[in-house]
Length: 118
Image (tube, rainbow, N blue to C red; front, side, top):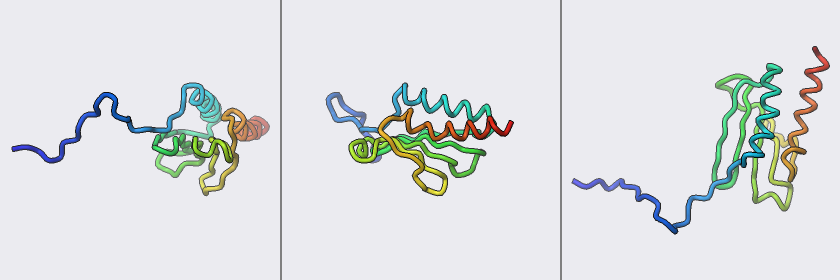
């Protein structure tokens, strides 16, 4: 009895499934901001999704909610608006750019506000 639901193992030389990913330096920059805001009590959890067109780092204030922010990498937009974007929970694009560190600076304002409130 032979199964018809067999998925063949990829062969050498065959084109692999291309996936947009965050590189080590990009993740280090994102996790640096994430760690600071976790320490400040603002963020609690995160998720990373990688697909054909976009890699997404989602940040949650509480587990089980919709993401408070999404940090997206879309290489196809690099020549137009920049590959990186910060998107709020309501879908508004807060910032776009071609340099991730510069794009992440939007969260520095949040950190400064938290420091002023202490």
